[in-house]
Length: 365
Image (cartoon, rainbow, N blue to C red; front, top):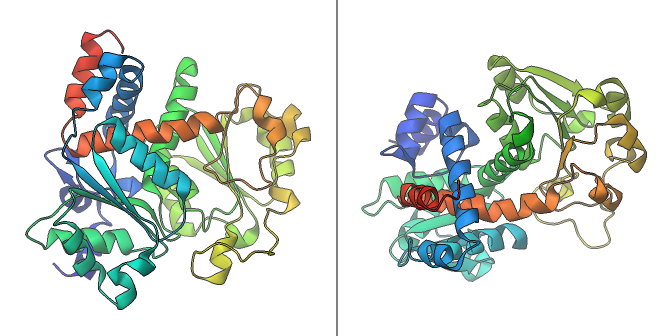
């Protein structure tokens, strides 16, 4: 199968499942669309089991024996200390060892080596590769290359260009389930995504995952240049979910703020203005324009139980004054990233059922 055929096959649900799962478990993690509702519930429940087991010494010792001997390579061609450390901490919780390459100028990529040759080489030393890269298709190409090798190992995308950030969306769904648990969960909710939707891979990945639930409505508020592409809107609508698009946050909240159950704020992705996905040069003015900042005075326009989220880093779009709001869960979101990525490693390497069984025996779930 050529790369073009492989990539095209990922566009249909049946072939996508066949290519990215093995024995019902995720193998490669490349797209939010690859997960079903049952997959998401299983992963989030596994994350909860890990979180609760980790509170106790015996539980921690049990967890750290599960993936002993598994080696994880974190290949990060884009800077993100938070995401890299989250993956490292997640692997550590289960006893796996990790290696981080955060500057590909020190690798053979700088010598012109192909993606396929590089990941085949790494597969000789590691059991899983986590990739973060400014190219949209990097993780897909890595997975395709390994599928054709004698030692295919899992590839987990930690962010591919402006395309998707799958594991961020997984932890976001976990945070939403956790935060809305006492109110009946995600089904029937209205979720608002604000900011640079066109280029924010985390926001778009979350929008794809929301279609796995019976969400009532997904709304976007963004500058006209950064509105979601038509394909994403059509995908959401195809799943029977209402979609709204607006270009002013204040006017939107005055009309619909009281109906919103969760707000997902994002920053303006100015690193893409240079075209290479690297940070804006020092001295450049960072920040979102006024119309897309969740100002403190908007507090009266939303409910006290409205969940407030942000994938980080934030600049000015979600001021610190919101941190005492009852629905502010950003720091919980960060920690949930470790639990959810640990659950993903467990599922990939076949330790998830054992984790959940132990949690049940100990009465932790």
